[in-house]
Image 1 (cartoon, rainbow, N blue to C red):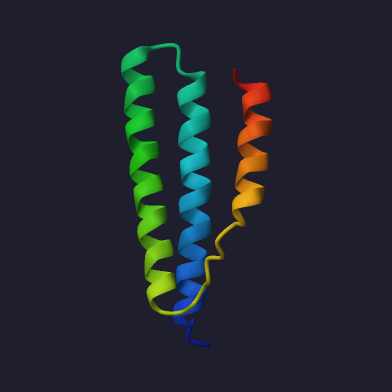
Image 2 (image 1 turned 90 degrees about the horizontal axis):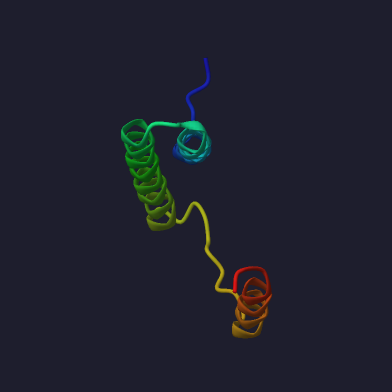
Length: 86
């Protein structure tokens, strides 16, 4: 059996953290009870924290590269959201 590389392991982890965060977010949206919804949101936030930690580890190891968006593009996105969310 082939041994998985660090890149493969971390890439799998980051995909799983993304999936879990989305699922907890969706579950929170469906919760009619505030206490349960808040608990789901708490778990979702923890999944986001873990996702960021895995991504940070990938960056430290040089396994992924984060590119900065051009400031013009950021301004375009801000303007677009101002139209949608006053």
